[in-house]
Amino acid sequence: MSASSPHQLVDHLFRHEAGRMTAVLTRIFGTENLCVVEDVVQDAFVKAVQTWSFKGVPENPAGWLMTVARNKALDIVRRNHNFRHISRELAGHLEQITEQQIEQLFLDHEIADSQLRMIFACCHPALNEEDQVAMTLKIVSGFSVTEIAKALLMQEAAVQKRLYRARKTLEENNIPLEIPSGAALEARLDIVLLVIYLLFNEGYNSQKSDELIRKDLCVEAIRLCFLLTEHAAGKKPVVFALLSLMCFQASRFDSRMENGDTIILLQHQDRSRWDQDLIGKAYQFLNHSAQGLQLTVYHIESAIAAEHALAASFETTNWVRMLKLYDLLAAQKPSPIVLLNRAVVKAQLELYGQSLEDIWNIKNIEGLLASQYIYSAVLGDIYLRAGEKAYANQYLTQAWEMTQSIAEKKLIAQKIEKCN
Image 1: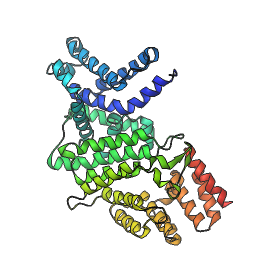
Image 2: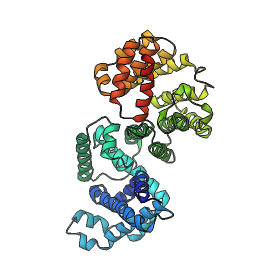
Image 3: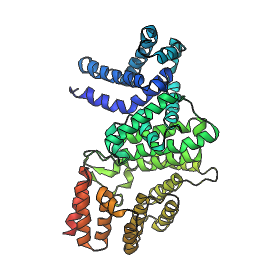
Image 4: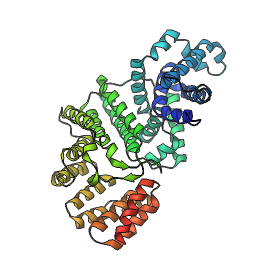
């Protein structure tokens, strides 16, 4: 094992384990002591790097980290009389917790329950929606400030302010770690699902320059959503719809990239490499989502993904039905990216004039073209297919200059060559 391996493993584990550790520790120390919780988690990972570099990686590294965090929590409880001068509130809270209770909280089923409680706490109505999203990505899923900024298209300084504001709100209001019920559950579930979907999208279309697909983020999003369906509070059609959508998307992982740096477009993907087990689960979850009368954006997006899975080839995709689904989606969610994707479907039907007109009618399209490469990339591609190579070259070049993804640059460069 190379010297850098422990560092790489710790970085990987932080994504998977930091949220679990934080959730359990917060049940012990309370949301009013998040700073203490984060310090304990950070110490555990620092100790992992130091110990594993010399003694090697243990057989169960995740369990090792959880044990270190548990022992640190027990140590704080045992010496809480020495802790009073640091935090009177924490000392008082710890007096109510026994060592046996702490041991119980580190059992697998309790860890899962703690995570759900943590998700709903981060999505508490005392926080505004923007702070809820940032806080959940940071605390529950272990996102760095840089990753949150990229996922939410924000400056890092703004993300730092959101996180500070959210922590202060949680601490000052002593938000309980509990899963709400009734109307409160319905209100908070929407933002929980939004956060999970943001996490999945960051992994599926990574902002990292050298890694377009980050499976660990997508797996974490699917895991959190499945965790919801395992609890009575999350057995809702909308939750199954989102889970179905993510499974459909994830099933195409192995066919989207070649040699690690070459994007394979949907029309050129080897469909035999699509994960049929995941597709089967996606259909199963889609069937579960059909209960009730509600039709959400996740239902529609999952139905769109199902259309791709149903087609034997790209050419035999039912683009007419796909356009109807996008019309439904645009009626509920007329966001720029939805309208852009609908324009792509129209281009598949060779409605190039309508497609281009729809893109230019997107609100603030000039600003989007100047700030997000995907709009220039799609616009340039449609101009290319319509035979207008000068315009195609202009917008594809603009997209190439804007994206930081090596794989995206390579794909766009191939299209620019066709313009010339």
